[in-house]
Picture 1: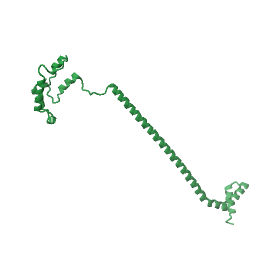
Picture 2: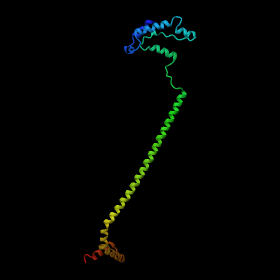
Picture 3: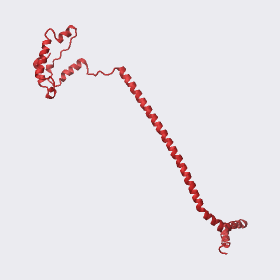
Length: 199
């Protein structure tokens, strides 16, 4: 219900970026305004239509709002109609969406847990296999070392059995028979006296 001059000034003050490519020009406004005035005569207006239905609309005078974004007018409308809101889902739909989301989350957690358990089991089996392989290799290394030591000790054992053990065994037997106060000195003296290389 604003005057034609107010509407014309408002359209003329719109930025060029908003007007470009639209019908919000002076000619377009005047054409649409003339069509509106022709259809909405004094007896056939939107206000009369609501009055006949006993619906009494609130009248807002937008000519008093000089702000470009009509902030005062918007605030008045918000007081009458409430804050703007989207047509979102109903509480039942929200509950169903939450249930589905919970099921998806639980299914995802279950799959992750199963994959983690499978991975842990595979890692444990691989670790056990490597430990078994390491034990086998360690046993083989010890066996080879033992064989090497035995092979290296054969000449030494032969030497001891041929040149040392006969005289040493006889000396130990004599030491046991005599039971001297200093058996080490007695054995040393015996070996010195009975050294076959000296003879």
